[in-house]
Length: 184
Image 1 (tube, rainbow, N blue to C red):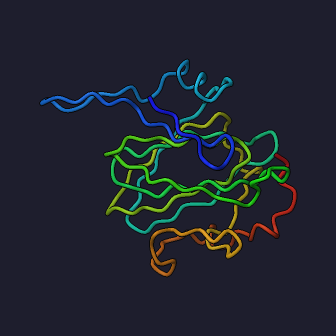
Image 2 (image 1 turned 180 degrees about the vertical axis):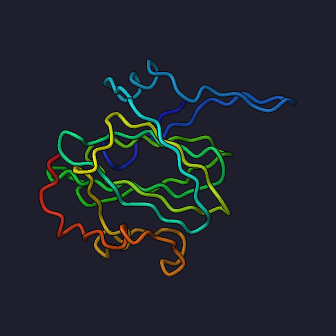
């Protein structure tokens, strides 16, 4: 596997070594030892999640606060998404900055997002199956988020924002400047 650091400290793009022949392909999608060696510390994933979405669906930007903060290892098994992490660590030199990567069932890349980041994605293909591992259990009382269209974040979702399908709940998320202390 190849590990590529991003401009946001701790966020990594992981590209597996894919073996192909006339039968198809094979790759190791996860090895705790190799993963922990790559990130430099032990991450114990405790929950796997999966979503199916259609073109233009934008999910996010979500995070968990305080003791319920989550690291995520995300990938797409079918289709293509633009996956985005936003640094919400107030003491970070990249606070408020974001990084996006295209993940697809064809490139098999994964994106590691450590605790202290908001996360979201938009579906670029007709449909997409999105999977992710979390190192902490979901806690409804600790959920938080940022408005996907926050002008301060200035995220290019690679689709006109008027064409995005966003949940009512996500449309009501605050701007970064109104979120306050994250408790991360």
